[in-house]
Amino acid sequence: MRKTMGIILMIALLSACGNSAASNDKGEVPELLEVKLTGPEQVEKNESVIVKAAVTYGDTAVDDADDVQFEVWKDGDKGNSKMIQPKKEDKGVYELHTAFKQDGLYMIQVHVTAKQQHNMPKTNIHVGEVKKESSSTEEETSHH
Image (cartoon, rainbow, N blue to C red; front, side):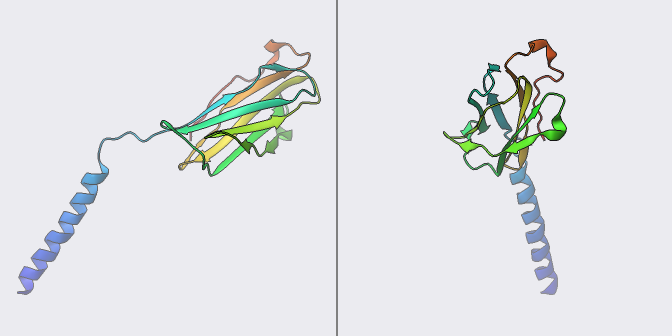
């Protein structure tokens, strides 16, 4: 009787392990957290600016991101960057409302954490009298 119970218990344990491994291996590719950053390329000093970050996970807008912050700095001066909380607007759209007091090239990077992923695309805005060729960094996107 003890042998029979031991065999039944061992079969139950082995079948449970086999089922969970099979159910987790469906060959599906996990969705990526995507962030599309849009805003003007050129503005005047003290002009009101809106930069939008549209956050999606697969085809679904992300309204419940864990954290969204815009980091803004003047080109070449990232050490003095400012982190700004956005306004949540439409489904999955987060907006930065700001203005720039000085001419120059400004970098804007949005940091988005959602669905256990982090994405931080970057863009730039030319403010006032600045040559577009003066950019020392290019637009880039990072996935983590």
